Image (cartoon, rainbow over all chains, first blue to last red; front, side, top):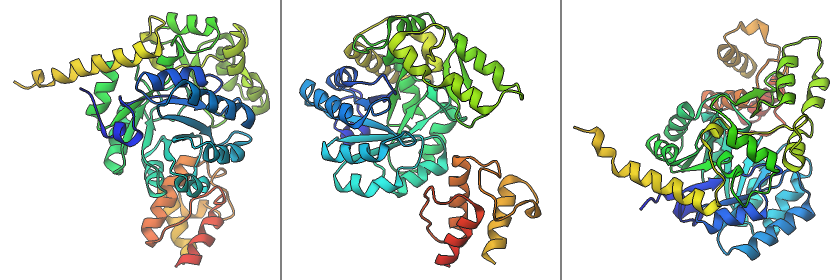
Length: 315
Length: 72
């Protein structure tokens, strides 16, 4: 049976976290993943305190199992949400896009397990020092906001640098990815894109269809010029952004205006022309819509089969 | 003394001349992103054998120099 220290740390059955995708990861998806034995994570992005509180309550009614909340530290209203997770007794908080130092004292005092996303070794070391329970080493294969270093290169380097458990993310979509990340030294994985097509994931049908028909080269990164790179499917607006980004006559405001609200338009309206369909590079591996339970179980059983056969390499 | 050492470490990180770095510059102006900044600050901690509070208040080279001077 597959088990790692992340399971004991987060009190989950399988070492699989569901990425707290902005506008997407709601109570229906997070509770389904937690019920399936992974860690479901709510996104606090694209919501306000009142709605986040009601999503947290929904998760609690749908499952008794642990769950998490992801806070994007750059997003507006994050300070109030940082208090809200304490009030609501959220078991796990994952953080992205910044340094959670100023919230750590309150979170740790409340017994919250804090698991920041880290895109570099130095940042992971800093997170360990300020009391993180684990870190998510996320490589550039991921969807949404990304760093430069790939998962294959980042994970072992982070594992060498910290003593807390490392959760690998970016480019993991099946049991092969999970098994490979354990080999790299990680104690678990976080998957986002694979859960986009979970039956419990409420994104627009068009978004799901686009993921299901995506190929290995279906994504691109835009926003390197602004310092906020985002991986997304090659939708018309993403292609336009990519072209304009190289055009010096286009100002930064024009660029950010092009992308603003694009994810929301993809998630809620499935807008072909204006949607920013964020997805990781493994989108090309995803061929069917499944329940969260089937996704978690199939990833785990595939990894178990592979790990059992590991010694076949030794002759 | 602190200033010279900080600038020397920054120059080494950026592979540039110490003379090209002005303490009044922000990390952003030096084309260093948030991940670079964390790495540099950790290098500085090691060099000075101190522990700094790494927060968003550390915006310019001078901010870092001031923070270090309080501790050494």
